[in-house]
Image (cartoon, rainbow, N blue to C red; front, side):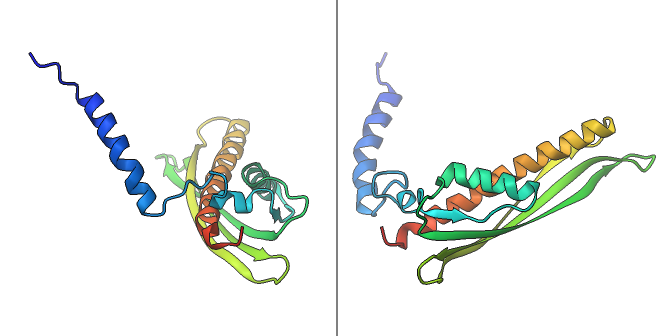
Amino acid sequence: MSSFDRRTFLTGACSALTAPALAGCGFTPAYAPGGAATRLRNAVSIMEPDDRAGYLMTRELEDRLGRASMPRYDLIYSLDLISQPVAISTSNIVMRYNLLGEGTYVLRDRDSGAVVLSGTVDSFTSFSASGSTVATQAAERDAEERLITILADQMVARLIAGSAGLPA
């Protein structure tokens, strides 16, 4: 019988091959010192919310980007949330909804006012409407929070990816 262990071989081979390959292509971890994410950390002023969804989005963005005391950039966003019935019973009662969300964002340089990055993110989540009115409202609020978290994650990922070209 052979005592050959594929896991040991692959672990050793991958680590020996991966590091030089990634270094050769210019890969730099986003959250490493001097990485793209450090350009935005505590440097972005996020617009003030005007409703619950805006509050949730601002909270999520500040959690990921930090709250800037001396911001270099302004982040302006808009949210569009739409609830669609997707499951209707034979007695014509809606049993399930999809909550569709789209977020448009613009990152502006505070000094010049120039648009540095912009884009749109979208996603959806669902919630059940088969319980009581209170349970349905709670499910809808929970779905809204989940959707905002998804949109904030996408927005921050795109901001970080696009910030590689920004000055440090």
